[in-house]
Length: 333
Image (cartoon, rainbow, N blue to C red; front, top):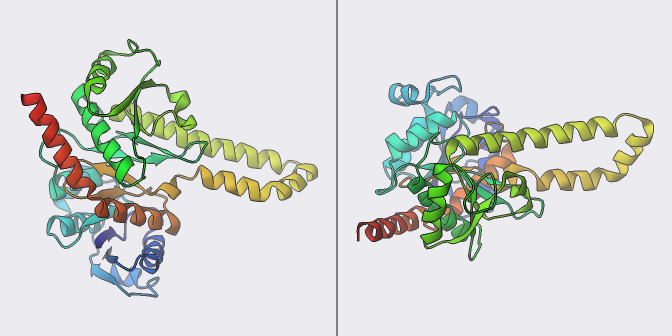
């Protein structure tokens, strides 16, 4: 299995990218990794090149670049070459922690959409209190969506939850302002009716306040709403941990309590750590394209590689292609 990785994408590139890749190679004997980026910078951290190839390029897409323009103009950028490796059949999938918009553009223009998919969806697995996690899509690949797109998101998310996360009958929920069937705007009302008739384990509407309780295994919404929810959850989690740290460091008594609670606090932090679940999959493309978090460390990159390997092994893209083809045939009849 071959995975191409943008070694220059993200806040901690290339060091953490390289360390994560070496960790993955040590864990998975069937894996071959191609790191694409500045060879001299990569080699500073590459202490084990077994089954790791380096392709040199000095061009990089920055976080400040306009996504579509950057992909079209920077043909030799590490991210573009990473996607091109998939398009050329030299890699089964690709990963980048770089500019999200540019990766979406590279996925669309270089890797290409599955026939029948109207719009791809960006889908991270987010933590829940019980530790099971849930898949949220779309979180920003497309700001707007039609009801039909949400059905496609649900199908793609269900396949991923079953084949990669091992959930036998994934519960699909529609993010809404209330759990009642008639709640919401025109989009959610129409989507509800379509999802109810789809070949899915649709459990109805779910509210944002219940997401971390594990209300559903797959939650679908439009990209604008999904991105707002994602950023709110991330920001809230960071703020809570900051407030907790401040409170525990406020006096000698609380510092002693913090020392006693330290193992439990680390366990709690790890349970709510997004990096344990891998990156956000860009579903609807001909091959797996994974967006790792911009601040990914080596562990986050390792988990993104593990996730990508499972997507390739489970033929997630192929299953999505077949499911969407069957859905479209049913609609035409």
